[in-house]
Image (cartoon, rainbow, N blue to C red; front, top):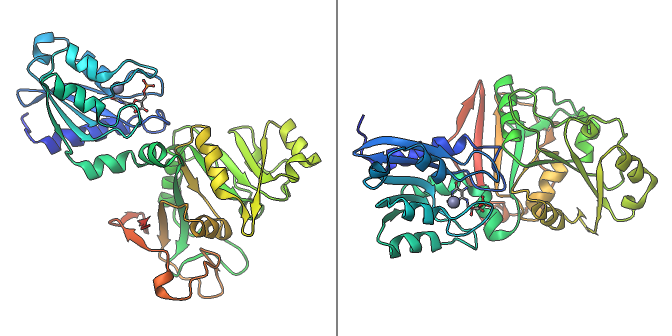
Amino acid sequence: MHHESHEWYMNRCFELALQGSGMVSPNPMVGSVIVHNGEIVGEGYHERFGGPHAEVHAIASVGNAEVLQNSTLYVNLEPCSHFGKTPPCADLILAKRIPRVVIGCRDPHEKVAGKGIERLTAAGVQVTEGVLMPEALKLNEAFIKSCTVGLPFVTLKLAQTLDGKIATAGGASRWITGEESRTQVHRLRCNCDAVVVGEATVQADDSELTVRHCAGRNPLRVLLDRRLSLFADARIFSTEAATLVFTTRASSCSVKAEQLRKRGVEVIGVDEDATGLDLKRILQELHRRGIISLLVEGGSRLSASFLGAALVDKLLVFIAPRLFGGDGLSAFAPLGVELPDQAVQLRFQPPVFFGRDLLLEAYVVS
Ligand code: AOF
Ligand code: ZN
């Protein structure tokens, strides 16, 4: 079948890249196809961290050297030009004498950042870049933020009623959204490196924060708990997944901290400011550990603190077709907004349905 559109082949790269989701972090998701006379003759993707890059798999899937010399290689991220855990893909493309390369977006990694494209162009390869660039950037938004800002990409997840309530006045929240939405949350979890919750949410829900409704790895569980008030048998400390607790410096030296450490839970003390634990420091520490994406799973105080500190990249809001009314618990603790102009400004993506619920993705406009 002939398609002959850059966009069509690039979309195939995205599909392939996504197969590495949850496996390649902190590396980007990358897919590659090789097109000969309008037909896809080879495909590959970056399958796991430390493993061969997408281009290596795609090239290896084409047995015939002569075919490669008359083909176009499509890849959603600029081919690398450096020796990391694997050798440079740009060199492989040159060695195989592939004459044309089509790229989604540049690799912001400091060791690449245009050098892959330069090397190809200098050797006479015809390079087309920027095909479906917005989509290519979005696919690797976590990797790109991690490289350029040095902090994880932060997604705030909410399950709320149409009137913005996350629990009834009495604190009941099971369940607001339907099963399809809840399954989708588990998919989000296994595609994130870490999830974070506040102590109050765990106190209320005894959440386990593991992936159960779909296949996938468990993210690192991060708990913010200034007083270390949770019982050591809370489900968040279950041995199914790793848990990292951030607390005050004083609490990190307490008997309770030692108890948790004995259970295999890591406890770290950080400084506090007027609003609580220093969230920026916490994100820096997570970045240092190779966490490129973080899902904030509640509750209203933690969500407001992250927003107030301008540390949120986007919101994923599951909206159930229900109303709780004014005595319900609001999704966010006070943000100190007095005038409409002071609001946190968002930019909506097109909504999608999960069962009867609506999922709205909204980027924070900085
Ligand atoms: C590509 N194709 O499929 C991927 C790329 O340690 P390494 O050798 O695996 O290199 C990791 C870096 O390479 C990563 O930070 C990013 O800059 C780039 N990833 N590049 O050409 C791929 N996964
Ligand atoms: Zn590479």
